[in-house]
Length: 191
Image (cartoon, rainbow, N blue to C red; front, side):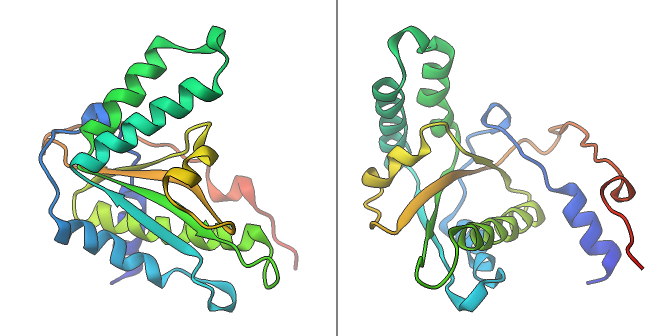
């Protein structure tokens, strides 16, 4: 792969939201291809702190119900939004798969931020693989994500840090253009 090929792949990565999904199912093989590249993320002291829980089919309904329950139980009644309730109820059903992104910390070995950073790099690998396979995806971090830990049967030193949605979109789907500030605005040389 050339630098130009890699740069093109990275630049084509998008957050593609459930409103753009077309309900065409992803196969287990496609999902496994996306997950398989995650293990090649850098990991300090080789802890490989990532853990993924994949929801498909009926699992999406279970996840949706849990997200609704958490939202209702942890949001003051005067702040509950009908729009948010509808999104929590419908968005998981639009995905072909949702991967709970979990991190296992090793407090005696490394600071938590290093384990979270390694897990985020694993997700970036997944995102690039999904892009290369024409699979729409995005990382969602609902406000009450920490309350999913029990539902996911996570251990004391594990926690959920996001949900990675995956689905197909129509071939002619137009994605919004992304803009980035030039790297020159975010760096300086010390020589």
